[in-house]
Image 1: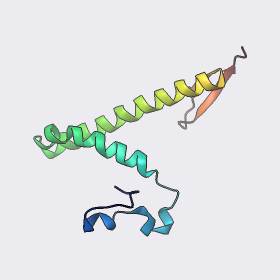
Image 2 (image 1 turned 135 degrees about the vertical axis):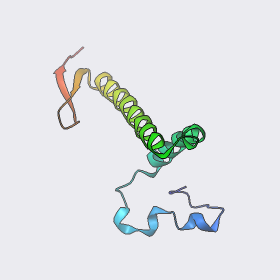
Image 3 (image 1 turned 90 degrees about the vertical axis):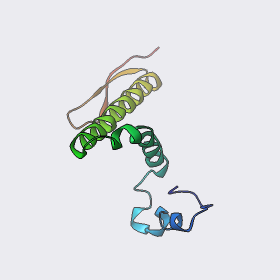
Length: 101
């Protein structure tokens, strides 16, 4: 993977983000690997399609996954902050109302 130091194949050594100082701190390699793992599950049926459908469904799957993860994160923030949250037009989560218990 991108953040593993114990790579077994020589080709994997070049995939380490540590080799590019400009990427340090900009890429969450754990999240990136989780995304690629999710994509691997869909690879078989996507590869049986023509390129246009493949790209459409790949983008659709990534969008659905992002929406699901964003909803989970918004719900988690609501519980932790004891408030209702909303997503603004820029995609940022904002506290809509504080509820102290």
